[in-house]
Image (cartoon, rainbow, N blue to C red; front, side, top):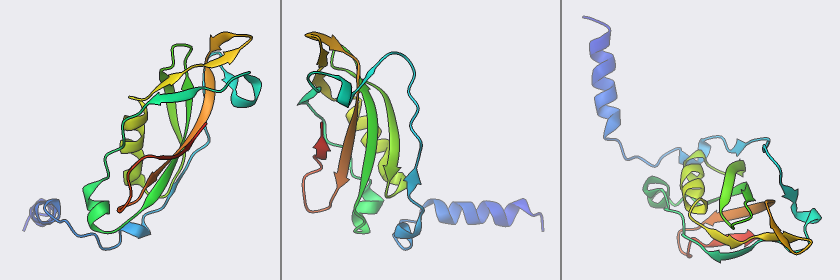
Length: 142
């Protein structure tokens, strides 16, 4: 028997699998964040960016069905127009929470940070919490 036949059959069987067993065993994500361009750290601005419009993240259905909850910690640059740029993940409890968190925060809008009365690009942390029985609003933003 050719080797590719059992491999193909196994792939077809696994493709339809919706098992939630073992989902919590996947390693969490930890990254070092590196931004480019000119921006200020939160401690260096006179006024921090303020969240004015947000879109909640989509809860991955397989994690929701499995009862898996978690958090994603992001670092973003809010540009002088209040638009999130350079969204990066510093930590996540599960890899499947990462993309929904990134997708949601890219649609958010802020009042930009101010330095000397002028809008400036500012790095801020965002922690997004995924909990089955609560709304998917960010846990904390600054």
